[in-house]
Image (tube, rainbow, N blue to C red; front, side, top):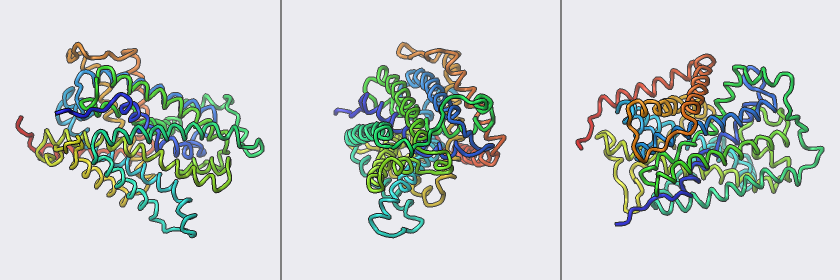
Length: 445
């Protein structure tokens, strides 16, 4: 029987779609806040998005070595179980299912709902209830669930098509202000460094803004979750990770520049639907509504990409632990049906219980811990001589993983210093996973 596998294009598009989502279209509204929260300096903001790309590439090079050593689906769950101990992998898998994918899907869904609200108000001719964005988010998640249940081929084709539409839309978004925006309406921002730019870059608020940037870049490791379901992973895995991350870095730099070129800091400050604000200045209201729909469509590609990766982690945990054994099956088209439904239910539950801001703040700290452990794992793999003939060595070792480790520790320090309550909720999440691990029994091999 032929086993369906994801192609190089699907894996690369999955990385791009996972990354280009909620973060880039919402983060700048928080970054332009006044100190001590934000860094309202155009040069510092552009610099921080460049650094985010460099750090993501440093992490991606390390993930190439880790993933090519084991060549199995499951992402950090698989990697950390083999590098350290099954309890570390189990905890990572639990966090990936709940936080890394389900919470991120919820955030993407809510952001899509916010972008679609102007269209909904136009169609229905009145202000809709406050819960409408949540209802839209749930409908979008259910739609993507149906796509995923069709199997590997259908979900892969959908991912390629919707990612192409997203990239085309982003190209239009980047070019259109220079063609249609009058000189009097643009912000006239100065991107050159000011006397305070470098002090801003070395400040603690810069570390806090870096959290939003790294959230926007999260997803650079996504194709590693399907290494076991990928065609020729030795070649396609590093290509998808590095190429996808490099493309997104360029996209982010262009988009950030366009946002500040079009809008003043006062127009951006504290806003979530940044794309709608930008397009409303460039075009008239009716055309801006069309772009609002395209923004939502762009975010749906991220939802689909996370539905490709997330259930594979749940499925792998179902193969290893009886408590999750109901997640291990899949249909004839390669879709892990129960795992998909499981992630759908969790994502919708999070939407019903929490708002966008709470979800966004919770995700990055929790995920950073396990990305940190995975990158440190490169040193462990070499110390234990776990590599083989097909292992692809980390480019720039040991400098690149050390850079990633240092930046991640800097962000964690910011959390501990500025928002210790977030660390408390992360601790509770990890504690619950450890308790479940000890209460569960490992399946017999």
